Image (cartoon, rainbow, N blue to C red; front, top):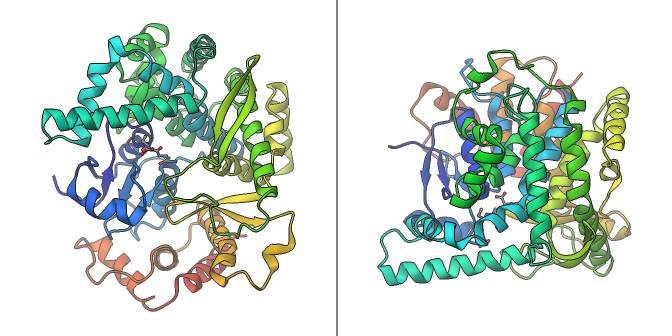
Length: 487
Ligand SMILES: N[C@@H](CCC(=O)N[C@@H](CS)C(=O)NCC(=O)O)C(=O)O
């Protein structure tokens, strides 16, 4: 099959599952390639600077890394895609701003908060899982290698993952509590799915995509947990199947599910997050603020770690279910926390009060006010720090211009998000202009060759008209254009 959008990933990869599901629901044709593909080894890894999946390659050759950023990439194109209406799947962002905040909360909890069960149920049940994992991993990582080489590849990959399992806080003391908590979460989600096919209604959102990674790629596929899932949470298992279907796949709801759930219906799940994940993200923020305070010289636009492959800035103890557990601290989680908080800050007073009341009644209110002294910014293919809010250093003229530009990136990202919530759909010419500036700002000059289809040709022509404009100027023009379109 040939298609222009390529997803590099693996069947057992948690974050690949999230993106694959989104692409299917969006009805975007794509080809999935394994990381053993020569192009991944020879080009993608060196461009990204580390071995990581998923990576998406767009038709113009742009690489996008990170599950949420890949979804954002397509979300930003939704309304600009063409000057003709064209069938596209539902947005990952619910139209209601309050549900949007909750979608981002489950994006954080799903992708990051369920890693303990995801890793425990994969790597601590060798009698049931190991042969499956060996085949699953080697067929993606080294399909053509000799048996000896495959054994080496699996030994390397699995020992790395077993170490990560410990670094996420899975150990002899925590295991019984992880199992108990997982059963509790599955039971609550199973109950929630009695009334609705997806987390927030009849449409999947960022929240579902976040949850799908651990619940499908690990718990829904690996032999031991998938049997458990079917037994104790059959609706959750069914939801993993539904999330992989291109259509709504919700016949058993007999068309009776509400289009959108009331936010308060999520209370039992929110209460679970308060107990299970709030202490961890609080410990992350406290550790990070101390870490940043110790590094006042850290320039905005840098990560403070030695290599792009290092995702953790240290280890912190956290109080979890009565135990003191050491966990690694990852700035990426703070980026997802910011997405939730930014969406919460954008609420009108009435909805903001409703959100606060819901979070207060479920023990999660602290999440709204948990702040790091620096923002985390996704730049290129990894996370870097924004300016320090508690230091004047960011206005220093000694900071190189390109680093201060991270503010521009922030404004650009905000404008991309705002472009999706314009109350009036701009005319076709403006849509094309938005598309062209977005591409010039995020990628640079258009490649010489464009796609052959009609719509693609129009878009390519509009993009190419910006040839020579700097990415920064294009970002500024995009921000100004979106602002001019807002009421
Ligand atoms: N935040 C990233 C995380 C991606 C990630 O952790 N991918 C895993 C596979 S599911 C990986 O590439 N691990 C390789 C390694 O850490 O060496 C995303 O959402 O894409």
